[in-house]
Image (cartoon, rainbow over all chains, first blue to last red; front, side):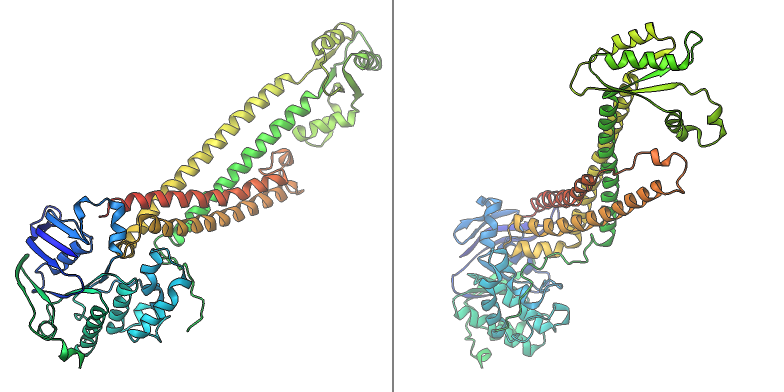
Length: 231
Length: 300
């Protein structure tokens, strides 16, 4: 689904923030991307969701070499990826429902086409009674769930989450991780960037990518099963 | 299911965005100036054509006192020659009070008029559509009636046409400048709006929005802004024009003011003025669209 080969990345003329990154993400799997703050996790995610271009190396997304893509081909590719941003990045002047519906709206769907799905999804993440609330009135956990709902509303093949438990308390964090496991069960590939050791220890990911100072230090198969989180 | 009707096309740009009150004010001022200028251009064009048509359809015989002929004989002779001249529809002598009336705007009302040796004037109306040998008529009058001259208004015609054409050109140039200034303002405001809402643009871009989708959000926002500003400017301009026409018509107006051109002198001019907000909206819309597409083109 996603393949990196000797990828390097720098911002402008600065030093490389990612160096010689090679890995692949399998379809339908749950992956973790770990590493300390500043290791380059967000930069790596940006490369995957096509917000940045690599300065060297090759990235293949859904079987296509991204360097060979025309600019007008990128939106279609991005729609196959859902992103939960670290800082949520909700639009404060839109309601919860409008925020979540945004990916469907940019696909050209009308409200009649997406409204029922959005309401159902919001009920599923426990926000069925907050449809018309604006993000500034939501708690951190609620914002996080809105961001997750927005990321999955268009049924992406790959879901990326950047520190999804970083802004919420452990209880909410656990619920959010269970949400990801459930989405993964339903067929979505999931890549979660986190440096939360509890999540890493408790979550059974098929692959753990560990970043350190811009390099992919290890690639481990996870040994644990996610039973603890399901309980 | 909650059946509340969601505003389905809630702007992605917040309503109180960068371009809010200040830009509305600027666009309203631009629209106001454009309306006044357009009104002036239309009126100049209409007046020039009216003057030219009015003057082309008539000529004036002027009879200055002459020692060789008495006043009544002079007038009778001039009328006789004029009325039988081919292509002349009518010849009517102006009374002294009518001649005085023509001088009033310049000299005011008072005893001074009574003492003036006002020449006798004959208003000659030409038959519409017929060629008239005015040079021949002028020569016949000059030869046969001492003190008579024919004024065919050609000098006035040429001067008026030249004045109207140059004034119109200036008006169109001002309209062009206003349009360019509006374009520049909208480009600046769009870029500022993109900068102020960079995060919104980035989020929408990253979730797979095509450039034209984002551009359409901006262009809709700016189209309404242009329309609203344009309507405010139009309303102010119409109020100004209406107030000025009242002032010109009032008894308190300065001497001669009623003879000055009113900026909008025909009802259909207001229809043209209605186009100003529409054009302002369209200019804002297309400018925003082009600006946004250019900026988005630089994003990955």
